[in-house]
Image (cartoon, rainbow, N blue to C red; front, side, top):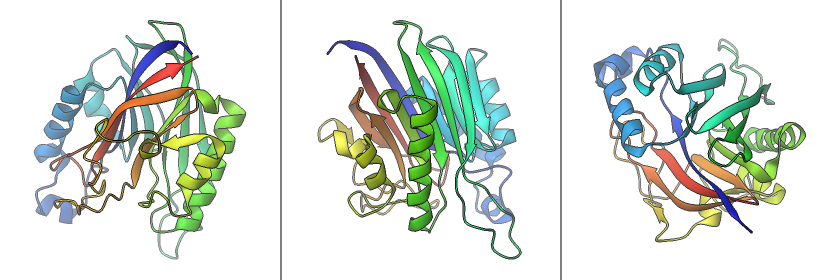
Length: 257
């Protein structure tokens, strides 16, 4: 095989803004500090593609101003794929609603979404697909259904072997039955399924921190998955230190053809 492309992807749950009164009272306001923390993290880690969740209107507007005019985005609701147009050319994109549980009485229905973006690496001319999603929290059966649907949609509308999939899949286990098991069976492998120390960092962190130091139990509810034609050579959990109630995950991958 020949190495053709190196791609640096970040998946980030940004924590929707404007926030609840409780978040603001606790010092977690977007405009009161989270925005600057977020921008500084993105500049420090220098991804070329960002798979974002809870990336609401005010966050999108602020990131667009901070990242610069070379950055573009495709989105469905608050699920988004950002990409650096100096490195990638947009060839097309699709937006899908995933199977979702019915709304609980008195609550607003929040359909789960998938954004699939077809990109070309400018340096090499090689095509690939970036996907971003946000699965239902606290309901493993629905997460599994959503992953089955996501795999099917990527297969039917893109190329699963040449896909990097970043998302908040809300499933912490790595080897228990659930969405990662569905993805692996289809040929879409979670980051810890392809990497081992020392090429993966902060692996024992929990990617949901809830505004507190995360429990060190290795539960990643956020993850990056890659198809057969991508081999991650580096990955880690990024400590967001108050920028979000999630830690983020970043991976650099080599595309093989």
